[in-house]
Amino acid sequence: MDKDSKIYIAGHRGLVGSAILKNLQSKGYNNIVTRTHKELDLTNQTTVATFFEDEKPDYVFLAAAKVGGIVANNLYRGDFIYENIMIQNNVIHQSYTHNVKKLLFLGSTCIYPKNAPQPMKEEYLLTGTLEYTNEPYAIAKIAGIKMCESYNLQYGTNFISVMPTNLYGPNDNFDLERSHVLPALIRKIHLAKLLSENNWKLIKEDLNKNPISGIDVNSSEKEIVIVLAKYGIYFSPFGGDASAEGAVEIWGSGRPKREFLWSEDMADACVFLMENRDFNETFSDDQQEIRNTHINIGTGKDISIKELAETIKQTIGFKGTLVFNTEKPDGAMRKLTDVSKLNALGWKYTVSLEDGVIKIYDWYLNIENN
Image 1 (cartoon, rainbow, N blue to C red):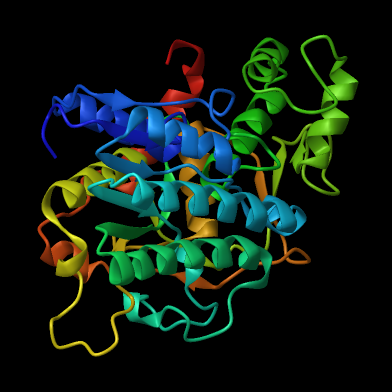
Image 2: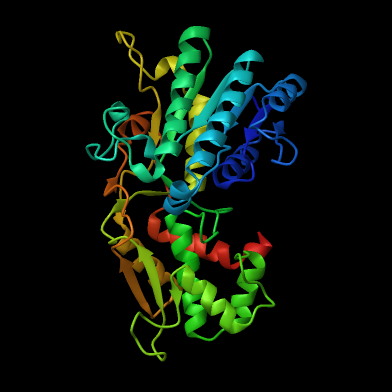
């Protein structure tokens, strides 16, 4: 990419897209095109075609997607498969139609089988049954990978796919129903700490910054306590007395392990690959069947949900109890990426999880200033 190449970032306000935008700007790219969802509905075929005809971008980062945690994925199954497939189909096809030089498609490690060997190599794609709770989302992302591969093989396009591990960072989603596990834990534990301190001023400031359905800054303390309890945020442990330090309920046993990557590291990897790697360099010349050309992006290190929660608890300074609800699903027991392919290309992560938790909690506390 040249510094004046026209670059379109689909999903520039999201966790990954905003980090990619920041990374490109810091490196001197000065011709970046963005659109909000209100300005451009990526699920609408006609409006996407018109956008590409008008703008004619040289490069595309496809970071737009409908995303969420285990609860949202399980509840809104139809929305997740429909909206993601529509977004991908429209952007990828119009990139081909309008001669985009290179496209980078962002997937998710949920594409791998539930019981895939660990760590997960790119070659494990489509070798087993997917995790049920996020199967629709995973199928949509697999379709995106295969669409990029298929267009490359049939039309000679240069579309590459990357599979990021669990991401967190600036502009993350802290909605208690739709967020991923790390930001959800940060907000739940933060609110539990404020409850235990009877700090209603900061609780209402939090509600003002990140609204919760059913309550707002004008709600009574009793109303707020009742709604927060629905999300597993309590004044006291189950069965404990009211003088205890509060409790946070967490879905599952806490035993599943997950890998986490700072979003700005992820963005740096994406820009690195766009600058240095083409589709025809993602497979060997002697392959009879070209598949699994995507590239994992992660740290190659994981941590149990229980250990993660304890790390966040210590960072926030919460003195209450973490309660693991084993009646709720765990999801896959382990999802660790094999990042040897990416490391061999010359890229490695820089932000440790411990430092990242401190950074994202600080960002969350100062969200109105970001």
